[in-house]
Image 1 (spheres, helix red, strand yellow):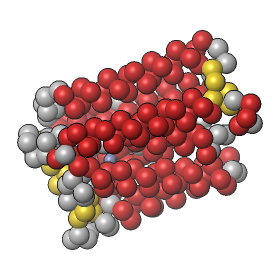
Image 2 (tube, helix red, strand yellow):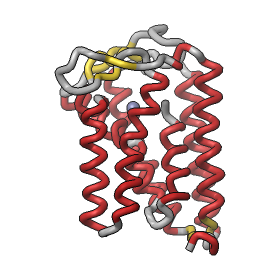
Image 3 (cartoon, rainbow, N blue to C red):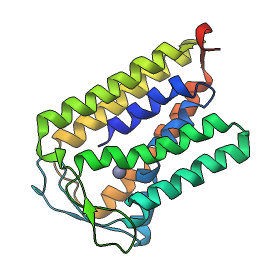
Image 4 (tube, protein in one colour):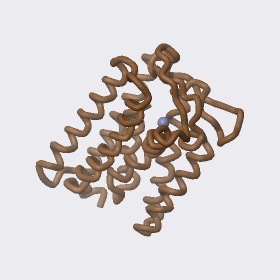
Length: 220
Ligand SMILES: [Zn+2]
């Protein structure tokens, strides 16, 4: 699951209009923003294994700190709580926390039984849609397009930057998603980790987009 998480971030703008899209992207993708760093530090592990699922050539052998249910809830409190301390907005903080946990729930749909419930536990879950290619693509595209519609319904560009930077971001995300889905497996683990770190770029990009857009009248 890649683009679906960004769809959640886009759609969340409808219910948390005062929160920047950058912050919503950070929340919805937070577990996958931690993961590459945890891989580089050796705290978590993944193996490249072509064919392990029909869509993702990765065997997620150990990632309880970024991707267990308990830690997803913990990170939700950390990110939502930090936002609350900084901005003093309770509803925004709540939506941010929910976005963080939503990442785990969306991953639950697509991963095979490799998602831990808590660190050190022996139970793993995953509904395995990565082995049902058509359903997965339809579902993930629907979430992304739904989020896109909600975001466009909530905001409008205040200048050309707000318009073009937004559509460039959307096209870029869709392009990366297609490359991930159709392209060859990553050459090595370092490539996975460093490509993962590039996702911070989308967060910064989304903060920039959001600065150049405003809420539509009916949302203010
Ligand atoms: Zn994930």
